[in-house]
Length: 144
Image (spheres, rainbow, N blue to C red):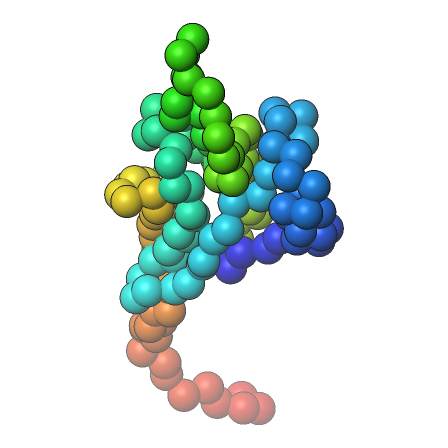
């Protein structure tokens, strides 16, 4: 139901971890995620620890879901001297192509404990259904 749009994103993530360069809006870092089906909906869970709720932007256009976020430094000011900075800062982004069988009009988003959870219902037209056979048939006569 979901398709990855960038096969090299994992390589970019590893390179970024090795170099320590933060993501920018022109080249954002990837955010780890899980995607699974739970009953009649798909669930996408994205890790965004330390990101403020108002720094998360979720858009859907046609079947393209885009999640953008920015983690800003927690300690700022004139008297702050950073001694150790290992937590990644900067811009994060993830794009997913959603299948036509998902109802993008009814996506729900929750953010708790640094995890953004998106719930996307399966569209009614994609659910299995029984087809009723209508009308009574009368036997046809052949050759008359």
